[in-house]
Image 1 (cartoon, rainbow, N blue to C red):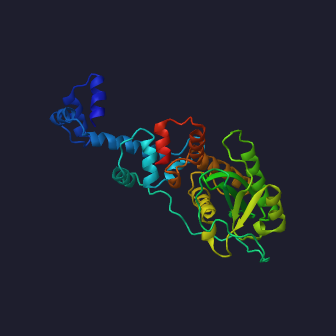
Image 2 (cartoon, rainbow, N blue to C red):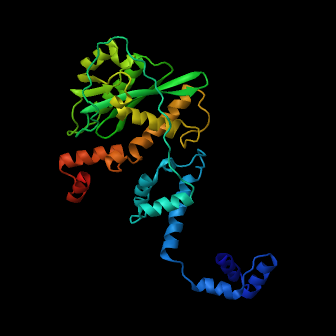
Image 3 (cartoon, one colour):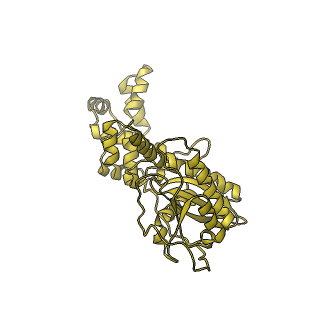
Length: 329
């Protein structure tokens, strides 16, 4: 209201005349009220709240090109606090984030139910579980985990396989197909091998004796896939049958993909998923965001790529003392 009256004053109208015109339109405001509003300065908290709410509303605005909101609308309170701290509000508290997210109508992503796609191998002879549910390691390329999931399309299903580095939770590669067989999951493996071997960094651990962990699906327990692992110098590890917790790190990524990217209200979807090509476009956008922009709580709210870069900087001795202490925190 004060902004409107100020605009009219700049055009040469008196405050009393402006207020009279507003009163005739049903807006009861007097010249005295206007002057008291101008004399009062808003509290710092009111100003800060308004700026934060503007940032939250900007995340929800549809992009002019895609018509979709920004992926950060998927964040819950903790990740949103980190995002705000990195975008101009370093001193914001978790209570403020919680309060203003409620005002903005933001709740974050709610995980859905897990869907089973594993078909157990008939052959009882398979690799042992070398992880024993220990999903943490101290360097890249020590342990890879893999799994695949399905996405409904008009003609049936498209299947998407991921290979993930356990250290940084980085998605090294992915593959899509309309059938889930050994060739399909092997393609994702070969892409991961190419990705790591093409990285020219003297501190990158060679892809040799890397533990390759999967569930007991027939695709991963097949003789052909086992031979491929042996030829590439990877050590196979397979969880027990019917227990998703034995491959929980990969299952988590599958769940995130289904709920963050495939869901109907996803910020990564442009419309219905009709063909495998639609799914490929979806995966490309989501994997890039996941690796380069999405904060990961397991990585102390860093992105997978950022976490790896900090590790390599520390190994090379180029990491400042302050940054090194933060990495170890």
